[in-house]
Length: 140
Length: 389
Image (cartoon, rainbow over all chains, first blue to last red; front, side, top):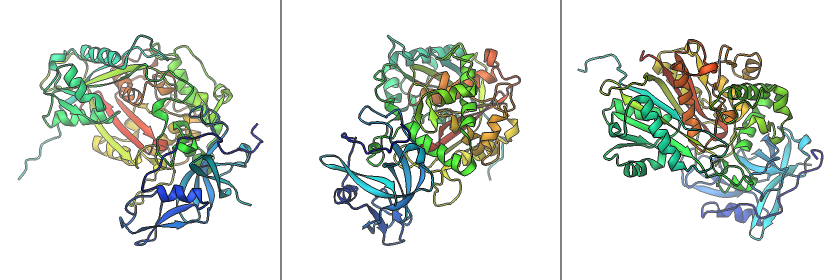
């Protein structure tokens, strides 16, 4: 079991968005991993906020990221949070090359092969009619 | 010019009570358990409802003031061990004389298809990834294992130690469920790597209460236990951002991985105490690894040395640093988002009063309590003593 690659969720997972985060989720629908970049201090700001977390400037601009990064930490869940999720799945913190971190699930990798430092790239999967999630897979 | 006068401690914990705790308490309600807990704690203090002029029950504070006809009364809004510091502060500022702190839960988690409701995040950047508390804390544990070489076996030593305490505690949900060897922990089913079932808190039902009173003004029968120091470290809201070990604020010190260190430094400085003055450590144990992290963060051992430290036998009842002596959230009880946090302080009071039965730490005069953990981006601490000092 732990040697077969993990897959994205197939069912409708819990999802929400706000006016602030709408550009991010729209980006996922069109195959772009977007994040905010501060025009004042150049910070990569994620998740989105109204003001930059470093200099508090309101001049935050959405940019398209390269979708590349590395695994900072990972886990493999065998007891799902709700019956909606099919285990095993691998929540991970990925450090993007642009310099911010995000939560995701790693797919296409067997649980035994997961490692801190593994290079990964974004892979979008539709998990419902209106929701596309940015999963990550091993970078070739 | 102000006249210097010695700090005076007038507030003390004078009553504590745990209701019955159980995996499932049929026929009980959250409110019913809360009332039982309040009565029990007041009885322990030798006080009655007529004496109460303050309630601390989180968002239920005003409701309880109305329904128990306690108004006008001071209301607390803190949670966990912070409730005790807040109440003591209110009393020492002359805002109240007898404050009851209460939390209870029954019947709110019966559908075990999902993890407990208080463990599930709702944030849009967290929920789609199937996160819950075990996964949040696993991400912290995995990072520590990567950086410091902490082992699966060391996690098992922590869980076995705490569960063996609970196994000998007649009030624990898992009384007589033991003894456990470290191998038993590792052999239980996997939940969120590196955590197995027995590395994790249980879920249960139960209630508890404490009474904090002005011992200069109020006649009490319960032995007073004093708040000597407190601290509160928060890095942000729980379960809404990646639980990164290296998360830093703009001051650039005290990363989230050592959350609680700054709080502990504050608490020890305020109390005028050192780490080796602590006789018993009532540490919050949501997951086995969190104990290793806290021992490092609070300075009871060196950075990255928590794993070998627990494996060397320091944390058992007869060790140099006895931890979580009632069995904690793993074995004693975990009845919601708050009761089990307050229960760290209740257990400390029992230890300092010499009432911990066969799990009594000999000559316990000063206790260190904690709540929270790095997976939740906060840690709060409380130092209690049997003398005002």
